[in-house]
Length: 191
Image (cartoon, rainbow, N blue to C red; front, side, top):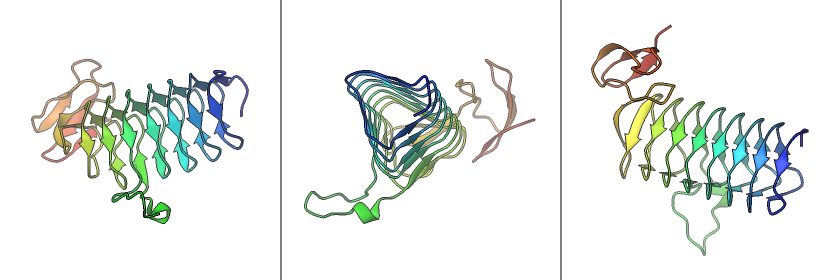
């Protein structure tokens, strides 16, 4: 572990886990020995991080988040309270499927809302926004705003976290002014 890592006395960080400088681990969190965690991350209370997990820099995990094996979170991802990842599509207690884990990747800047679930084997695009309680069952496009069960795209989000217009064409974010090209099935930032 790099210097200036803060670990609460009730937390468990197994030997072998790597945590970047400035990372904070709060009450009753468990980080398994194979986990790789970047700089300036924050783990709320009662978070679980599996062995085969890679977490980038400045990732925020609120209370009760479960990040199981085969998950990668890129930089600046936000995981809301009690959200969870799965790693097997068809789990059974009496059938060992550890060799069937499906990798999930959450790209830079994405937000995963409170109590959302990300079913394994999918990619969440950069700056996508998964609403509270949504269940992600397929890949999510960059900047997409997803809600419901199963999650469906209802709009687009700026990198700053504000909702964008659904109209096709060029639009500016009402909060920060960033410009986007919005099409029927895409949202792309403009230089």
